[in-house]
Length: 160
DNA sequence: GGCTTTTTTCCTGTTT
DNA sequence: CAAACAGGAAAAAAGC
Image 1 (cartoon, chains in turn blue, cyan, brown):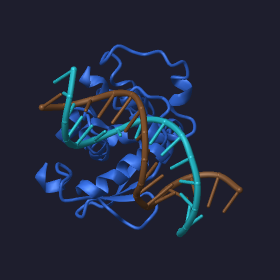
Image 2: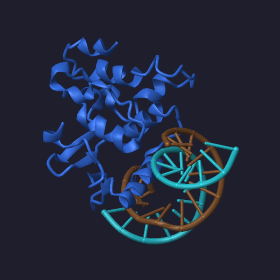
Image 3: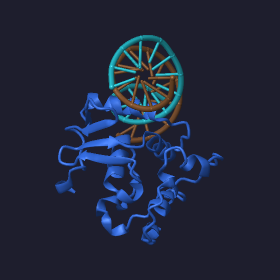
């Protein structure tokens, strides 16, 4: 099942990565799927459309986005180009600064992960702001830009 | 089960 | 103006 990544045809179609057009339409009827059977639904949709070759990615991304915490989810998304869809983007890889390129899409993906279709970036960002207190994230005074803090781990390029 | 931590929800105000 | 940012408060969910 993890080999769903192997249809490597290049397909630079970005329509599914459009924040407004993505999963809400495909999952408009909010059926609840059994725990992990459809776990890669979001990912494969992303894969089909963004179609980035599997070899590009670090081995890290293999356990695709099962992380229970929000910051880990964000981190893993950042680390796995094939499911990222350009939702997140490194601003400064060394310093762990990244930017949320498609806020709405990120919220949808997180909501999908938590089986919560009411998730919004507004609410997601509130959770991110709580991380400032715990040192998981640090403040960057640019809109949609965050930085991993001292208590975040597993994001550093050389420490993978 | 209770307690703690994390996330969600909601809100009101501010800033970009 | 719309979208982000800011946090307080409270409740729900998740972990232990």
